[in-house]
Amino acid sequence: MPPTKTFNWTEFVHHWRIAEGCTYLNHGSFGPSPLPVQEKRMELLAELESQPMEFLIRTTPRLLKEATQSLAAFLNCEQGNLAFVPNATEGMNVVAKNVPLAAGDEVLLTDHEYGAVVRIWGNACKQVGAKTVLVRLPQPLQSKDEVVEAIFAAVTEKTRILVVSHVTSPTAVILPVQEICQRAKQSGLMVVIDGPHAPVMVDVDLRSMGCDFYCASTHKWLCAPFGTGFLYVKSKYKQGLVPNTISWGRSLQGDDAHWTDEFHWPGTFDPTGYLSIPTAIQFFKEIGLKRFREQTHALAKYVRERLLELTDHAPLSEDSEEWYGSMVTVPFDAGETTNLKPGEPHPLQRWLATEHQLEVPVFEWHQQWHVRVSCQLYNTPEQIDLLVKLLQEWKSQTG
Image (cartoon, rainbow, N blue to C red; front, side, top):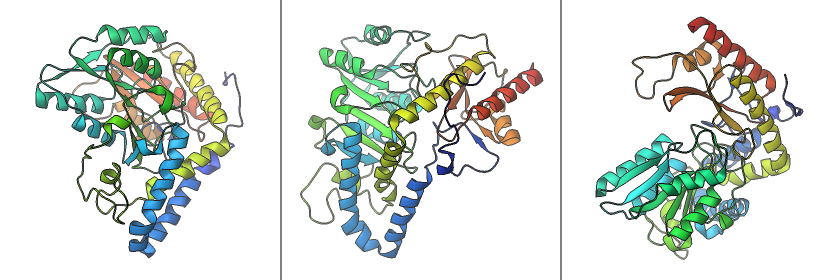
């Protein structure tokens, strides 16, 4: 059965150059930029290479300011609260490096959190004698209130920080971050949001959200160039914030000091990725966020229905756009594996990529293998049918 809501599925495919023969269903890991964004970056790079002094010293500061203005308007926050960082991981490291923790303190995370984020905070806690606490959320996810209650049931007098994903990486579910922030404010707790999958997939309204820090990558669903992201910092934490790389910490033009000076000149670098972010924002404005979200969610819903036919396991959440957007994770019996090294892909993922040029992540979460499928505007129902056919073939081969 095709998706219940149909679109002209190939209308926007020409904006990308996916390798011939490749079925790319992993935009959530490494999302390629559409051609208008690539072209803008190449234009800027040509300008950089033709006169580096002019571009880096005199042009880049102005364009960085314009880029942060564009991004701040998109995220509904003050420009002065944003700094560019290469990715969400870099931003999260900055927060963990700067937020004071003491022996006995607790940092609360959920069991849906990205592994690198858990490791970042585990390392920060280890250095001072604090500890991380992992909260298991209800399964399946059915109620925002249940999620909020599960998190705050684990809060103790030692809890200092809540670290929560906006859209989770392994399970691809949307968490009620605004409700979590509101409850945390009542308890006097700091909230750090990990948001690399959120911008464009869902609304990110930082002014009303009320978090203390928000770390995101713009090279995922916003489709800006690889190696671009941002760190949002509530005003009271800005001054004295130390980046992971220390350089001059000031403007190279003698401008008035600003906290972002520490971040926006890390030494000689290529700023063209950051400077292309406004083009990525404009790309989605022209297509229409509503159209993007409706089309990609309809395809994700189709994925969910088709993959659930292949398993006896329950879905991770209710079937609603409240819980998932352009990306969906479904349990799948991929077969037992032994002696997999850390980071080594499951044989199914390898087989799909090397034998069939189909890219999709297969991973273990809560002792169960899952398939996570990303649906971008260059994907079609026929590609989902191909994935299902190959998964059926794998099951028949492996028993």
